[in-house]
Amino acid sequence: MNTITAEKFVRANIAQEVWGIASSIDIYNCDPAKIRDADLIKRFVVELCDLIEMKRFGETQVVHFGEDEKVAGFSMVQLIETSLISAHFANKTNVTYLDVFSCKAYDPETVKSFAQEYFGGSFSSLNVNRRY
Image 1 (cartoon, rainbow, N blue to C red):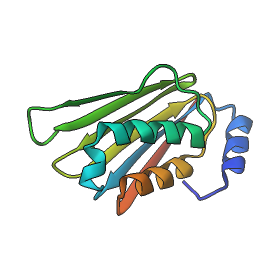
Image 2 (image 1 turned 135 degrees about the vertical axis):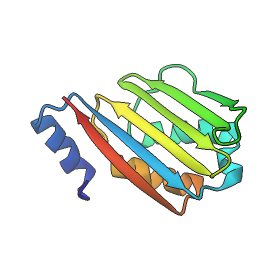
Image 3 (image 1 turned 180 degrees about the vertical axis):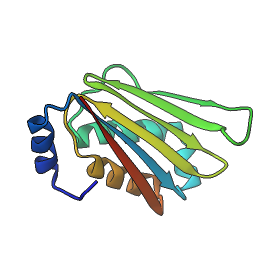
């Protein structure tokens, strides 16, 4: 995705009559202490929703699971009034897999930058799909 301002991104999506935006963000080399702390993950969700102006619906769910070391870690789900935010935090690799889907426009680059900084990742990748 080309780097554009959030305002231009929102206007472009409205002009294209986009129903929703789905972003998948993989953040590598995250701070192990941060991705293993349920309270920090919950605080991340609150701060992210405030940043991208999404209204949370209900409480953030954070559950640790995974008998296989390859997939063990916390998973998070937060319903928002315009869809949902979810993530899995892989303990073995210290990678965060974050997904944001919303029919309200937001800037995926803003989400990527904020999440990478919050979880202390050294680099990240972003894939954006527009839903029509």
